[in-house]
Image 1 (cartoon, one colour):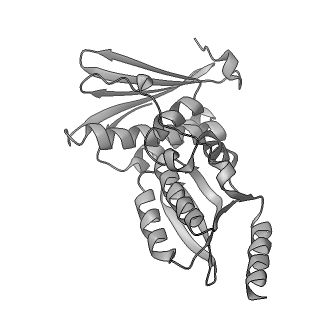
Image 2 (spheres, rainbow over the protein chains, first blue to last red; image 1 turned 120 degrees about the vertical axis):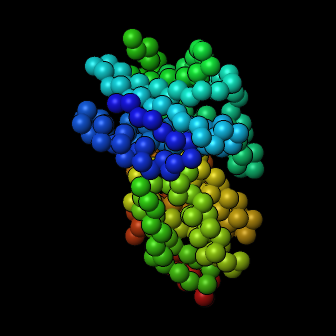
Length: 142
Length: 122
């Protein structure tokens, strides 16, 4: 499925559309939960950090369910920003854990792969789950 | 998706709430506003029944962190019960579990709250 999303719109419309697609594809349980979390993290970050300077920003969401992989691809126009290089701030003390970096940490922890591409002014984030194995050790999915 | 917040238990020092729906970037501001209003200065035990929570993202976790800090500062506790496996995984990923009092069932949490109230009244 492919969906055009306005960065300023509530995330609920996106999640409802994705839920319908996942139901059709037979995806449920923890994977659906993790996908919801990650879509909200990405949407909130685009709304907060990118749409602040560009209120009309639209981004594209693509969900592809294959025999071995589920791919979530998010594309948006803008300056180069590689979230996979950002260092999550997730300290051990209660005080240091409250601010920043949790979203990126969750994206990495709840998926099997997290990649970034930049081409012709378009940022692309690719989040992938291996449907054939629960093991993070065997996470390559091609 | 929306979030419903219901009061299930209330005393001078304890407040129990049930959350139903998604705790995400759409709903967390309302959750934070309601908690700020309901968690008055005398509350030292805040209990959240999460059985109806479909998922929680970092926006919701920030609200939980805020309430956890508030309870710790009052020598109190933030108690959580009946998380689904996905929600529990998120709490584990952000290393929140050791700071929470986690109960397997509402009954277990109610009994604990009642025993605390009995101790305070005796």
